[in-house]
Image 1 (cartoon, rainbow, N blue to C red):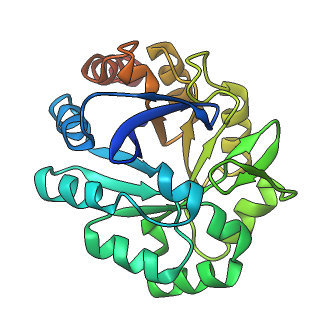
Image 2: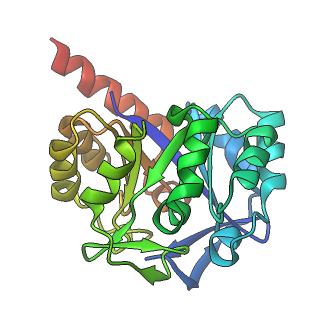
Length: 248
């Protein structure tokens, strides 16, 4: 069954959501990242995806404090991303309590550094970020368009042992307009042995059920939870119900 992974995006220590990755279109939420993590855990989450948006923008990890707080005060598995450009930073994040680290720009721009990181740590603890906009792979907090082909990009690191890939259709992210089911189905068909995680635009339980049927292993949901379009407990209950029907 598909794993539901709530997102906690952080700017200046506060929970935010962007529209299509645009920093000028940020919505701030009053609850602290720790309080939000507590609530997600209470509703049944087992894992969260933390995005240090400050780090993604200026290549420095500014919100590692929030990671440490959540690690010490919850039993959640934590995937951390944003602004990670070196093995030194990777080591620091694992020491601070990250269970998984999502790598995007570093994998695109510094192959050798990331290759060495995969030799030093279990590749299963990394998630490759393959974020796209209108078919183009993005880097640097979604601010730069690259010429890298997403299929070649994934295959390059698959050879090195990467099994987890997260892909965000940035045109959908934060818009609550629905996710790109066709895109994720095609990606899953191209890489049937990979653990693919969908992200961007999810706003209904029906979409989650559809993603589950494609074989996608995980889905990251942010704004739909914050804007109360979806309730995590109800989403999980609905998934279990549909999964049980499918097994009969």
